[in-house]
Image (tube, rainbow, N blue to C red; front, top):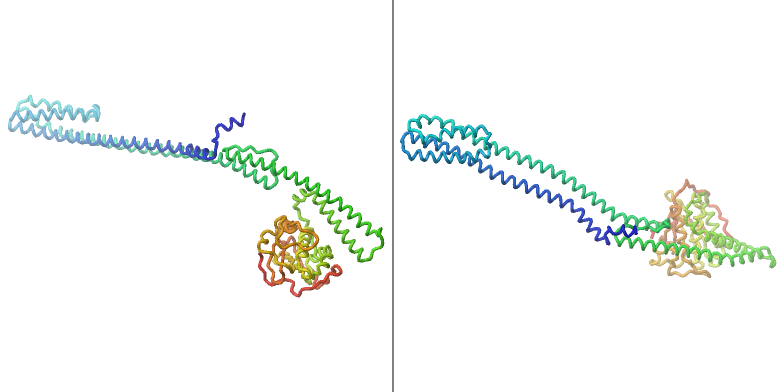
Length: 509
């Protein structure tokens, strides 16, 4: 029920979530744009109205000034000419002045002292049409203050227009500040919404990434991870859960296979070891020295095979055990030990072994190094030329140990070079001998090299048809020891000391 309720608010797909995120993030920006438009429209309308009013009021104030001059002119002409028509014109001018003054008074306010003074003066001048010519002449001096008061009214109008302009500026500043605050607030909301929806999209992806990393590293949680997000990612999480269960099933099947196979191998091996032990004890009759030596090799090989089977039983433990057993050893002693294991195969193939004349001490993991050399030498014997050559070289190069195992025979095809170190891969060249290869030897050798922070590669060699180079970094200071020393190899192995321990310049493939 909780899962159903939690899914109701979520989009059903990733495109829907992205579209909804876009719309919600754009909503504050749309509000900001609307408010900015409203504020700009208000300022534009206010400026337009104020401009029209300013023009009208200024024009009216100037008209009042002109009418004051015209009234004075008509009065003076009447005093000279005594024409009643001139006084009639004067009365019309005074009436027009009164109408404009009342309109201007509504703008400036009745409390304005200039308006009050002008109205008082105008009231006295409006009685002139009722006066005689002599009385009109005596009041002509009143037009001087009247003109000055009309000009003052024009100044008051200009001051009022300037005050309105300042008000518009103040309002524009206020709107600007308000828009800045709104922009900061709404953009911050948009950013927070962007982060929120980014988290909604990224969270299931990170959950899937962690799950995939867990599957790849082998540390996957046994409890299924519930992905919360769009339907596509939820479905992908369910597929990963299914994949995790399938991997667990396959791992269990692998373990079961290894247990059964190890058990099946140990049964015939026990019979072989028991029979070999009876022969060594001469229960079936006396043995010649050569026969005793061969049986000794068989017994050692069966013991090694038993050790490998026991390691196979602890496969998981070995997979996670990446610790290095560091020790100082003589590389040439390792050469001799590995060659001793393959003495019978070397005798049968008639191969000539070439060793450098000087021994070399080094600090590394001797068991892993021996395992690498054992695989390389085994491959060289299995795929090498009958009666051919086997070169083993060791040298120190730039604080690194360089070991090369080369042999004569059929070169490795170019198409196989990129796949040599992959598990269970077998190239075009067929293995010679009674045993069929599994294709895992070089993979184990490469893994053993990487465990020591080294590298195993196939290189081109002008003197050999196949050459593998093992490079191991220094773990401690390594020094060469001994020069020109004889090596005690197994009887029957032909050794040729090379005059030049290192090859001419070669190129790594």
